[in-house]
Structure formats: structure tokens, C-alpha cells
Amino acid sequence: MMNFPIIMGITSGASFLLGFLLLSNSRKVNLIANRYLGLFALVLGFAMIEIPLFYQKIYLEYPNLFEMIGLVRFLTAPFLYISILYFTSFNKKFEKKNLWHFLPFLLFLIFRFPFFITGKNFEFSYETGRVVFFILKVSLPLQTIVYWCLSFRRLQKHLTNVREISSSAQEIDLSWLKYFLLVLLFILLGWLNLLFFNLNGLIKFTPLVYLVSVFFLAYFSLQQKEIFDFSKSELNDLSAIKENKKEAPKRVSEIRLNELDQKLYFSINSEKVYLNNDLSLPILAAKIGASCNETSFVINELYHDNFYNFINRYRIEEAKKLLLSEAYSQLNILGIAYEAGFNSKTTFNTTFKKHTGLSPTEFVKLNKIKTEKEP
Image (cartoon, rainbow, N blue to C red; front, side, top):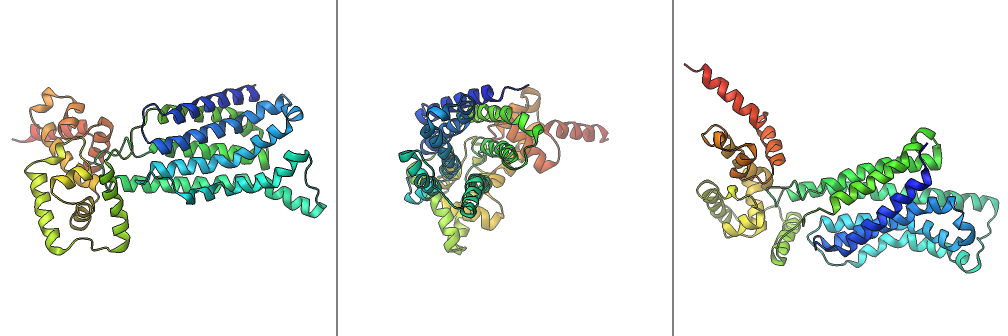
């Protein structure tokens, strides 16, 4: 049988280690986001350690410490959500409005303050006690559900937004955080089961899921790339896109639109700028002498597409030519992908199949069969 306290103790230790590594952030990427993610990991570690401490009956000797560990749980969801906010935002400055996310923790801390001073709980009538107990029981699961929904929605928006500025979104789309949220959803279901349903089959697997989720988060968070690897001026320019979309749908005059369209056509068809493996919206904007806002508008308005699909459509056409040329006999699929402007074999295969309905290998075989049938 699975030893619940030991596994939770190991999970807690792993969370503490991950938290310290993220706070130190030796790679200096996504600094503010990783600090909050590190705080989330530390708080998660405290939440996990509550179980082995309970089995050791530490709460009898140090009730105040045990009570504080319980209250700290109200910080887990806000820290994760604020981390995701910074991962997905061009703005990296501290915002006072984020302090509101810690209000539930503060309220419950004030509510439990008499216990920390006197060691005694409030005394309530039977009816009032039932209401208070119910609030205490559902408040933490409810907070977690609300923040889970907000976090998942934010990551879904990020996937759309990142394709407006990058031609290779795979390494910066934060899919690892979205998968982590899905694992957390299973943990949340296990948690709700412990509180309300007590289904033994689910309880047995919960500690192992906790452990796997922490190692999953550690693996991906410690090898992440900078999400928005741009200069300060470029970040300000990119921030303007969202604001201008809200204020005025027609963000570029007709004359300027035609001028930029011609420059874009030349840059794409003559200079083949899409072959740049690291091409981003700011790079293309600088190439045609426009702002990110203007360039984005031209692509959205005239080509009815986002930057990611617009650039990769040309890369796929280039890849099709290479696959059917002598280059294919000299290069493997990865080589073809790089030559066509992609910087990932996975992105190339996925995008190629999306545009053609075939994998690169299937495309070559099909065209070889067609060629052989021709008289």
C-alpha cells in the first residue's frame, strides 16, 4: 500500500527545492513571473508538508505553526495566477492591484488572529457555528476553482496573442503551464473527493499525482525560454497593438496601408524574409519601416490572418519546393525545416500537416507516385 505521509513529505521537499531554484533564477529569464512561480512552489510545499506533520502529531506541540500552514494554502492559487499574468504580459512592472488577490488570506488571518494570541477559538452559537464551518470548508476549494479558470483562460488567450508576434510559438506558448493546470485539475478533484466524497479509489492515487505534478513543473519551468525576448522599446510597441485594437479598428490610413503592403510584398517575395528562423513581428516591422501595430494591422486587415500563420504559409511553400528538389536527397527532414525558415522539427511537421493534410514524408511519396504515373 502507498505510504501517504512519506510520499507527501518527498513531494513537499521537491516543491521547496523547486521554489528556491525559481527564486534564484540563475538563467535570468522571465524574472518576475518566475519569482511568483517560485513563491507558488514554496507555498505548495508548505501545504504538502501539513499531512506528514499531522501524522507526526506536530499540531499538538506547535498548534500555531500548524494553523499558519493551513492559512498559507490561501496563497497558492493567487501566486500561480499572478505568475501566469507576468508570463503572458508585456508589462513587467509591479501593479498594486495584484495585492487584492491576497485579500482572502488576509481576512482568514485576521479571523484566526485571536487563536494565535490566546490559543482559543471563537465561540459561536450552534447555527452560527454551522455557517462558519461551511464557509471555512468551501472557501479554499472555491478560491482554487475560480483561479484555475482564470489561469486557464489567460493561457488560452496567450496562445492567440503570441501568434500575433512570433512565427515560432512552440517554445513560448506556455503549453507546459497549461498541461500543469490540467494536472492540477485532477489534484483538485482528488482534494474535493477528500473533503466531500471520500472515494477510496481516488484517494490512493492522489499522493502519486502530487509528486508527478511537482516533477513535471520542475522539468519544464527550469528549461523555459524568455517569453518576450524583445527590447524595452519593442515591448512598448507590442503593448500598443492591444490598446489600439480596442480604441480604433481602423488603425492605419488607406494610403499608409497600401504603402506598407507594397513593402511587405517586396520583403516576403523578393527578400524572402520568412527564411529567417528567428523572425518575429518586431523584426519584420523594422524591415518594412513600420511599427508593430501597423505591421500587425496590415497582416490582419489585408491577409485576414495572424503573423504566425501568414509567415508559416510561405515557409510551407518553400519546404514543398525543397522536398521535391535535389535538396531532399542531401538534407533530412530537419534540414529541410531549417532551410525553409522553421527552427523546430515538431513545429514544421505540425504546420506542414495543417496546411497540406499530409506529413512531409507522405507528401514526397505521393508526389513520387504521381511522377511515376506520368507518361
